Length: 217
Image 1 (tube, rainbow, N blue to C red):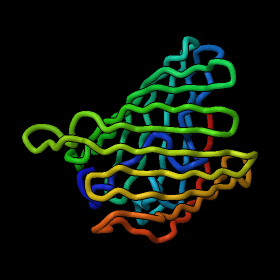
Image 2 (image 1 turned 90 degrees about the vertical axis):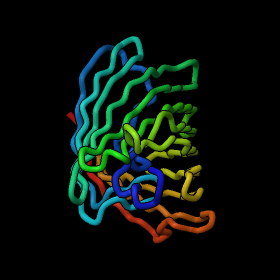
Image 3 (image 1 turned 180 degrees about the vertical axis):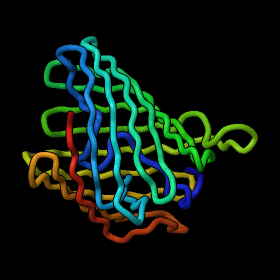
Image 4 (image 1 turned 180 degrees about the horizontal axis):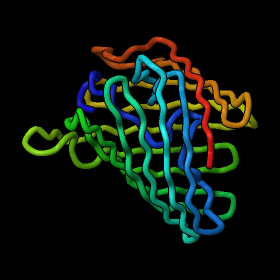
């Protein structure tokens, strides 16, 4: 996204703090899994990206070697988004790791198409994630180099989660804080607040609250 306006059609595969996310455990065997989620809004990196409820679904393949592939799609206010991703994850002692690549695609807003490479590390309830912009926003003659990066620190204790994210964005950098609570398996309440942003302060810093329920198959 080269501007705040283009945030209306963007999403990280990890979703909200305790929503559908890339699992950081190595699968015991190859398997296919799917999920379906409904949320009160589309919450992404501290920003509300929809004015209506969002319906999303994912289909994932995990190989016993640690390699995985998947796809995710969601409704937008007037369009759809779909993401394609793949990578490798595993565990060394008590440490977990996940390296991958994700592409975000918008049929009705191709200038917002983008890709990121990511690295995730986990130890107990602690986690650190880094997403690095690669390639361009959009395609063809109107493509703009993607130089934006995003970093997240998180901690999960039983049903509670907290996270701090920093978006190194070409429009203006900002920092957000999230808290979440899983009231029932699959039912998660999340509150997110932008607490700092650089001039010209283009981001909406209103408190965002999301309720989401995920069905897993």
